[in-house]
Length: 113
Image 1: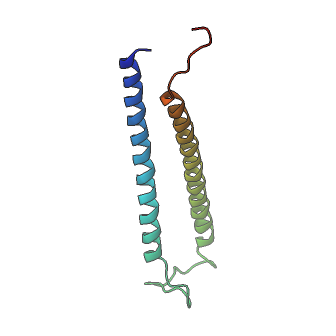
Image 2 (image 1 turned 90 degrees about the horizontal axis):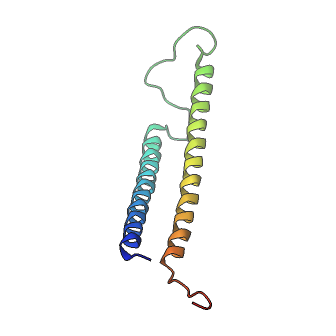
């Protein structure tokens, strides 16, 4: 096999591997940062939540239950999509690693050759 072609493939695979690692590292950083921000925003678990202002007057909940349900559904969908993307990237990385190991193996001699 030609050495230059193999070197190009290996270099390309290295670049793809580094790009994937960068994406996954960034995703991990965002998850940590989001968790920290969420922890800052949530009131302490002990006692009733505190509000800076009173809730709007009107019907029993002013439509808040519907808004909260819609927000929860949206957050659940985002979480599902992130989990799905993480699984896809994980499978892709595993496939890339397996293929790379296969490519890096020394060639075997064919019988009679």
